[in-house]
Image 1 (cartoon, rainbow over the protein chains, first blue to last red):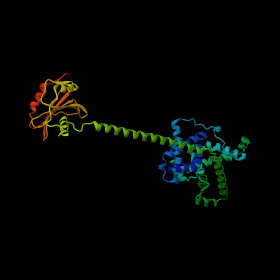
Image 2 (cartoon, rainbow over the protein chains, first blue to last red):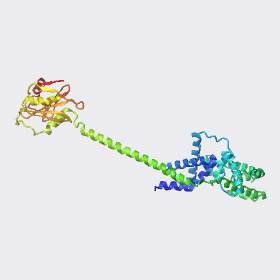
Image 3 (cartoon, each protein chain N blue to C red):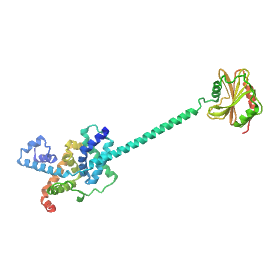
Image 4 (cartoon, rainbow over the protein chains, first blue to last red):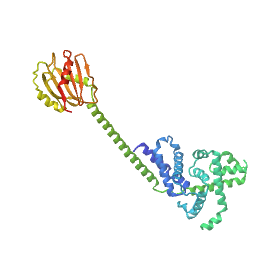
Length: 171
Length: 237
């Protein structure tokens, strides 16, 4: 087995799960997310030689993934404008109460404007710092921090407003 | 730190507060519970974001890549094969070309080389008894004939002249044999009507389908030979 093959498989082992989740929150569809991850890793395989620093692997992969996701829109104009609740799948098996809680919050996160949701996913799920997110999204750090503030602020307000309604809807 | 800035900082990144913000927590009793709330919210967000990943995702990714690189290798193999084939083809072609291309590019060079090659094979002392009929029999190949003998003919044999079937005539000369070639026309060969080197001199007479080249040593009168050839040779086409 070649070294290149080794490196590729190590990347898959280390980062495919994170990338899949990230893709899911970008496109909000399990199947599309899987396709985007497939395309991302194929492209990563082809340009694996350009990845010099393994520490940069994750942000490198995310950069490829964002580009692949953008290409999807170039190829075909998907009707992604309006968010439909039914497309958000409740896929994480937890206790039923937790499940309801997660499902509700997932819908709210999915409903966030993409420019707020993306840095939030990178921070909470990806563990990237403000500077790193700024680098990945090609924004300045202040803009990133403002968007993170607004993302959490919106979610916090929804959480504070909705607990009773949530109980009625789901209980 | 004012409350607005404090809240902004906590909202932006509750799990990585800077020292200044940490210090600010102590300034107000409500701030600590606010931070806890945000941390709890972040936990929920994290849990919500943390969707299940298809179990077979990793194997699918590796499988797909294996197929792609296999295809690439196949393609590379095909390219290599095609490359090897064209190299072989070009080599074959150039070999063929080199084999059959003219080593000499003028008729006279060729004729002289031919004569030198046969140096010593013929001599003036050899019997000259080839008949006109036998000569004309061979001349038929070139659609030509001689009305009469232009000299005492020692030998009349076909030969290869730059790959072309030609007629090689050797006549008795004054001091050494005189060579006459009947050669089919070949546009690749330049014809000089008169030529010479340190041992021999020659004439070439060009007809529609054939060339006649006469080579002799310096003692021969080439004009006489040429006239003889011109007055005796006949072409049927």
